[in-house]
Length: 359
Image 1 (cartoon, helix red, strand yellow):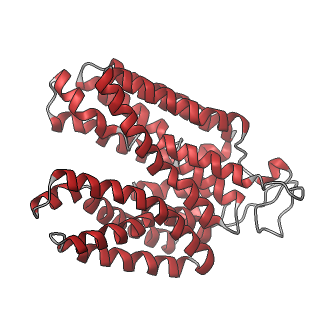
Image 2 (image 1 turned 90 degrees about the horizontal axis):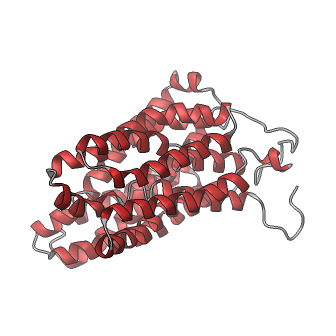
């Protein structure tokens, strides 16, 4: 049990989850774009052919999510996550040895499949088990790691590319990936509070001797209407969010803004996204998912209308703020709602299937 004056151990789980997101998304996904120019110039690939390796990253992760979600519950969680981290980190560094397109494709399948077990899946599973109260805040804090990871590691990679080579940058980020995740997996992560003789924060009914698992199995969830409503809703949200986000720079250029201005807008968006995740998490804790959804959807609608008028500076500002605070609906909200609706009995497997739609 937590002694008086001690920090609740679940907050160490939040810190571990933060660094899982920092590496698993901040490096593996958010840093892929920084390598494009250098690799294309050096190896003379076409942009479309080389870009397919990012598609393979996402596709292999989609296939792996439900499998890894089940494995994390069935077997030793630390071992499963540790294997995923080693494979993904070494795999990312292995991009440095690629000289042919098929090399990049093969490595991407490995990095994507194992990378699925290094970020949002284990983080969501752990935080759902450790928090009843303040779960939204815990997820909001942890999920800021993905944006902060990208903000730190993109310029780091660019500096290494400029001063050394793109190969060295891949190796360096692979080392960073391993360095910020493995210590937490080895020394910090525990799947359930009962493993530390504790209960989830705010759970007054559970025993400290064994984890109390309640809710639906993945088989039962797949047969339920709420599951498919949730899955389709998050698929649509993801299509809208990514569709807008990926076209912000080119659209701003089309309506008369300079490329440097568009880059500044994206930087501001990434920074505000950190606050947006914390805000949505707090809203979910205080008022529940219904108000959280209303809050997020309202801001998304405002952002879309503002985006259409982005030729004017006030509309750009409104868009950036509203979109940054609405975008966490694709990360914080699915993680929170799967636990809220289906419980923690088979959370990892259910969330893994949901991620097929939300990726």
